[in-house]
Image (cartoon, rainbow, N blue to C red):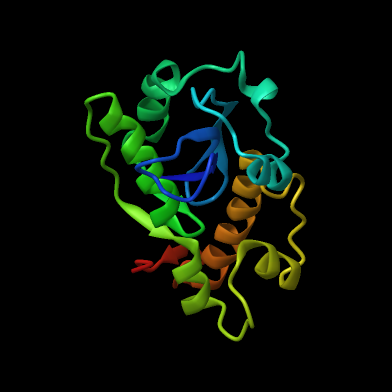
Length: 179
């Protein structure tokens, strides 16, 4: 089981910045079986350059839940799954930092679709999500928004899984270990 996750934030540094949006798609290796998405009130100002990139502004998140209000849901929906993201260290560190601020530790196995793409989809000039999706004809509805980027990562992940599945003797797919 996999939780394919994307977040939007107030900046690049997990220790100083906060999450403004999160999207999670739970995938069983064949299809999405559950999802969760919400804006998040970061309880701080969203810089103009972030608003320009994501379209998320202070007014949009003013009445959104704060991270502590969604923390239980994030734990529950990702329980027993591998945390998957495009450049996983960014998303994972931010989520871990949000839990540390609440006095909790968040730990999941992680998997990076950048690394998987480089290994199983070689030959691309760039492995950024936007350029890779362009190369693979994956349409991103809502670029630089958690839901759009997470869903594009789901489609990318499924392409990687398709390239990584071998037929067995009885015609049933057999998945090799990804790492």
